[in-house]
Amino acid sequence: MEQQPERSGDPMRKRDTAPEVRVSDRERDAAVDILAAALTEGRLLPQEHADRVGAALRARTAGELAALTADLPAPRPDKEERKRKELAEWYAEWRYWLGGALVLSVIWGVSCLSDGELQFYWPVTPLGIWAAVLLAAAFRPGSGKDDDTA
Image (cartoon, one colour):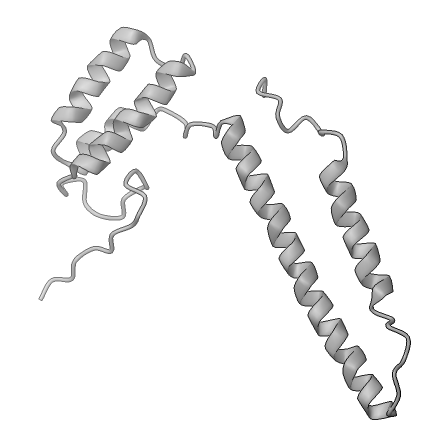
């Protein structure tokens, strides 16, 4: 029995399968989106864009579709997407901080139980420094990441 190739959620990923594999409407639409971004960025002339879009909509195989976008770079994420990604990364850092706070508090609690008395909450020092670094990173002036000239 022949094994089916694994399907990915990204319709325009480099295919490990043969170029004769038929493509879906979703894959054609993804190729058209890449072509539209290339037109917007000035990488394609309007007539070339129209020709490639027509060919993308007529494409039946992965090879035909890949040839239309092979010479184009992946579209750059817009400012909104970059900000959303940075915010998600910042929230992830705070989740790491919370995990560290939990681990340090458990160590402090076990230490208090083994000594039989309540001790100074020493995790406040490393957690405070860590939180200060995270807040400083959030409020620092931009480092040119939003510059679209690159």
